[in-house]
Image (tube, rainbow, N blue to C red; front, side, top):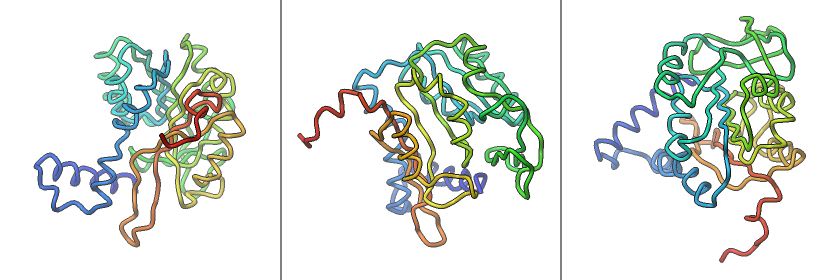
Length: 248
C-alpha cells in the first residue's frame, strides 16, 4: 500500500515540478499545498523551542532532512526497524554530524516485536505474530533509546508507525514530559484492531497533555475519494497559542 502511494506521490510531484498543474486533481493539489514543510514553517514562526528531533519510522531520513531546513541546529535521532534503509541512513548521518540512528522498532518494552517487512516503506508492528507481521525485530522504548543516546529536550517526536502509536507513546512517557511538538500520521480507517482513528488519537493525546494545532498532507484514497489519512501536529495544552480563542 505504501509503495503504491509513494509512486502516486512521485507522479504528482513530477507534474508539479513540470508546472503541469492542470493534470493534478484538487485533492492532490491540496496534498502538496498543505505540506509538512509548510506546517513546520507556521509552527516555528511561533518560536517553539526544540533541541532534539526523534524521528520514528525514519525510513531513508527524508523527513529529518526536511525538518533540518527549519531547525538545523537540533540533534536528530532516527529510529527505523528495517535494515533495507541502512545505506541511506549511514549516508544521511555521515553527512550530518548532528544526526544518529538505531535499527530497531519502538514500543512499550525492551525485547522484540513482529513486523511486516514485505514493504520497505511500510510495515505494521505487532506484539505477537499475525497474518501481516511475522518477522521478529528488536524493540526498544523511546525513553530508553533517547536516554542512551544522551539527547536533551525539549523534543520534537514524529511517528510514522502505521497503527502502533499507542505502544510507542506508552514507552515514551518521560520523553513526552519534555516534548514541545508531536507529529503523528493518523488515519480515518482502521489499519488494524489496535490502531486508533484520528479522533481517538486526539483524545489519547489530550490525556497526555497535548492539543492539535495544525495538520498536513491530507490524503484521499482513490477508489472512493474518502479521506484516508493526515498528519496531526500536537503541542502542549498550556502553550500560549491557546490563550486566545478568537479568530483575529
